[in-house]
Amino acid sequence: MSNIRHTPTAPTRAKALAAGERIDAHRHDDHQIVYAGSGVLAVTTDAGTWFAPGNRAIWVPAGTVHAHRAHGHLDLHLVGLPADDNPLGLDAPTVLAVSPLLRELILAYTRDPADDSPERHRLLAVLRDQLRASPQQPLRLPTPTDPRLAAVCALVHTDPADSRSLAALGAATGVGERTLSRLFRREFGMTFPQWRTQSRLYHALRLLAEDTPVTTVAHRCGWASASAFIDVFRRSFGHTPGTHGRGAQGDRWGRGG
Image 1 (cartoon, one colour):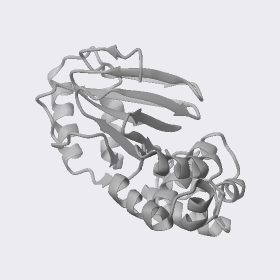
Image 2 (cartoon, helix red, strand yellow):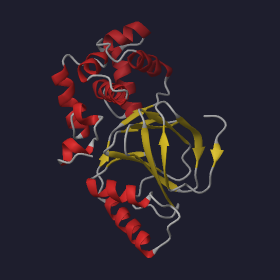
Image 3 (cartoon, one colour):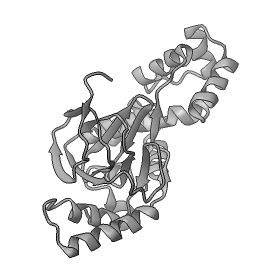
Image 4 (cartoon, helix red, strand yellow):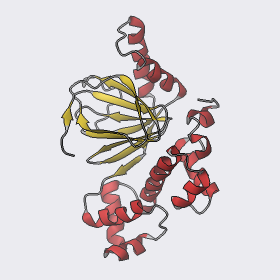
């Protein structure tokens, strides 16, 4: 990433981003929690892309060079924490599950950043407690460093519906299946099928944020049927793709928004 801005203090605020809008590469001396109340958020570093729908947040550690991109209209909420305040003990970007309580705490805490009242300080204390209890989620697309692996990943990213096996993709790029399988495990810590599912889910979230019909998303992203896509999506995100655009919390938590 070039032209990197350095903003020492990570802001705490709410900000709307239009579909496709970006916040270019920058870094803070503070930690930051990034949450999308609507739309889908992608946070990219040199190591990969982390993505989150409305019931996920992304932890960005102090000093991490990162960029944001909005898929769909993004209701972005940012919470900055000093570098010596790391309730999660995490030193790499991480996707976190957001419970209904944590969601309301983030929304309330970012509503009036200038508020320095004792009540707001207590709000932050509860928010930090809820962060500690947030399960981590493997919603990440790592960036390949080996050019052989990068070539295969590019084919899948270009056409998520491509159903070729790893052996066939390797033949198309001149690399053996065993070599590629080893590279996926070594660089990404996952198998090729696991990585391809992550890639397809990322593309699916982007399409859903553009109000693409669920059946169309399923076929464009490589699932054999809409029901198979819905099953994988629900297990990954806790709600169905059909409820995704109406507020991700609704299906999982039994509430409307």
